[in-house]
Length: 353
Image 1: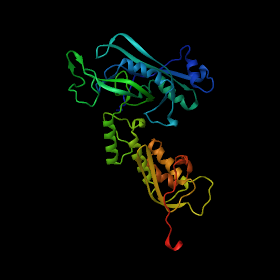
Image 2: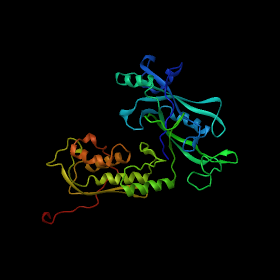
Image 3: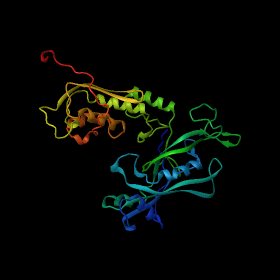
Image 4: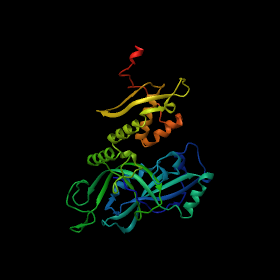
């Protein structure tokens, strides 16, 4: 499942030894005057509004996973949106404070930096002025289990989060952190103290996603209590094939295919008719079958690279008509390697034979 929630505001800080940590991530040594550093409260072990919480051990596992991860805006994954980078994390304890579950409270603190440039001075000013306060994080865990009986989430164990059984609060315990993706500046607070985009995937969830994607034609399905559209990494391979197939259909018909040919090749016309372009899974292989009245140089390989980009969320299937209309090769996907590409059949007009 994927949920966006927010954490407490960042605080500016650059402590002794931190510049060395920053320079481990930079290509060239930076000086203290060149960087702006701040700290954020990434997530904690309190039971949240959804009746879920990170186990303290999970916070310890997340700490090293977040080092080196980027700070972006609204979980919008793009290189242009990268604003900062985490260079150090640590689990903090608050003596005397207990969680709703009754155990000691702790939270994951992150230290982030930005290289000072004319372009980010307004962002730094907004952080200093308290305008940019809330951040949330994107990560994934392997297990989500009932705190009372240990049953995996999704199974009917009879226990309801928020209820008390024999003096113990029921909640969903998020355990075994597997990855950390990024932290984001967000606008709307959703959870006090700490928040997270939590990733969790089981076969039943993947089946629901696949059914909804195929039934609605959506590139992504957003569960109101489970999935964030910005976290493409939890989409199953089946969903990737579904997106690729829908992207492939956008190439069908008569178009100018200049945008998906190797630059510099010469031909009388770049207009071709693609009769069909279909993508399906065959065991461990993904088959792309395309039929046309002719192909430009590297056209099929570039078309395939473009639908792979669609599956990776780097572009939408709905972007392809505009890419073709532009004739701009740089807007399409890469030319994939030729391995596996072969011709299966040729048709000739009778009057040519």
